[in-house]
Amino acid sequence: MKPLALPRMSQVTAAHACWDLHAHADLVDGRNSVAEMAAAARARGLTVLAFTEHARSSFQSWWPRYVEAVGAARAGENGGLEIVLGLEANAIGAPGNVDLTPDMWRDADLVLGAVHGYYDAASWDRIYPEELGPEAALDYETGHLCGLCDNPGVHVLAHPFWLHRRHFGEPPEAALRWVWEKA
Image (tube, rainbow, N blue to C red; front, side):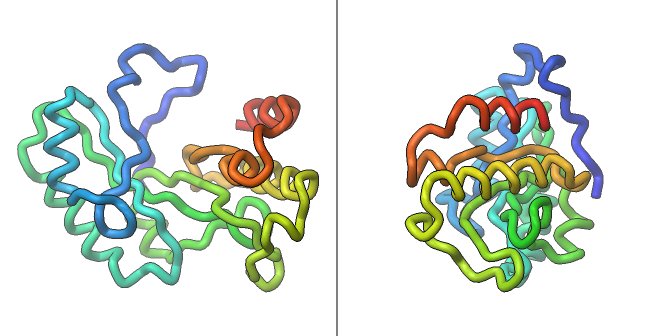
C-alpha cells in the first residue's frame, strides 16, 4: 500500500478544500464511472480525488476491474488532479478489524474505516439496533471507531457515528470528543 500524505487536523488549510477523499463510482453503489467522475472533478477544480468503493472480502470479483479503471484514469491527462485508489472498509469482528482481502490491502493507497452495522464479534452475525438499544449501540460504535484509529492501515474514519445518528439520534458530545481525541 502507498499511503496518501494526509495532513493532521491541525495542518489542514484552505487548499485541502479542493480534496474529495470519499467518492463512490458505479462499481458498487455510485452512479457514474471512474472516468466520468475524474472528468467532473477536474472541471470543478479539485486537486485530489479518492475513489473509495465499499469493499469487503466477499466483494473481490469486481476488485481487478476497479483497480484497472482507476489506473486508466490516473494514466490519462489529469490537469493537476491527483487520483487516489482507495476503499471504504467495514469494521467487523473485534474493534479495529476490517474485512478486506490481501490484494485490497496491497493495492489501496487510502483506506477509509467505517462502522456500517452492528455485528457479533465471534460469528459476524448482524445484530439489529433495536436488540442493542442506544447505550450498547453507542458503546459498540465508539469502540469500533477507536479501534479503527488504532489500525495502522486505516487512514480516515468515514462518517463517524452514522449508525447512531440513523437509529438513535445525535451521540453524546463526550463520545464525539473521545473519538476526536483518539483520531
